[in-house]
Length: 265
Picture: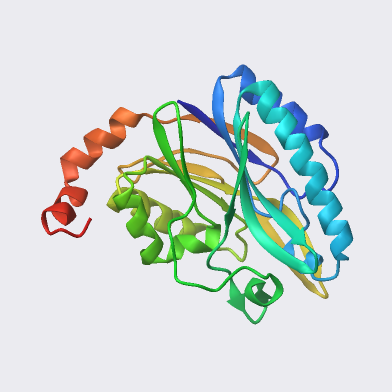
């Protein structure tokens, strides 16, 4: 199956680039397209100073466009989006398919002093549950928020549900390239699945400091090897995943079988 990542900076209310790249992806037989965090909306630090009605208008416009694209091009689009309900603001990931739309409310948010999403957003703080899962052409996908990659508890659902590919939208910065790459490779290998990571590009300037988003969107296979990756510019990455490879890797290493024999799955 062909899947893809669209690597851009924040596009605001514009949809021109989305239309262009989705048409290209459709012509290459792409069935699932993933976007990075804060691409349809402004970066978190900018949202803090943006009126809620403007955020809501932007998100509603982009969701309308995405629904049209998914239907017209018979494609599933997985896109981080900010949802405003009254005076509450939620960080979500939308799965926009040709005939429906589903939402995943990110369960674990960054809560550091310099980057505190948990304090800004109204996402529920509750016991963890399974992230959003869905199937396309016999391939099982799971959606996680970028920060959620770090938590073992969510990865137990990958084994329980026999997930073939994790869709991971991120917005990584601060020279974290090697750490993210190492973690992605380890997670893919120990859970015998693909990981498709989408990262944003561009910059945000705060006082005398610049936040640089470095791209490096990539696909890691079940053996923990990077199959495809992008640089730090505006690009579309089209890659192929093989369900048979997932099954063969699971049989070869037997990680899931070892857990099943001990009644841990």
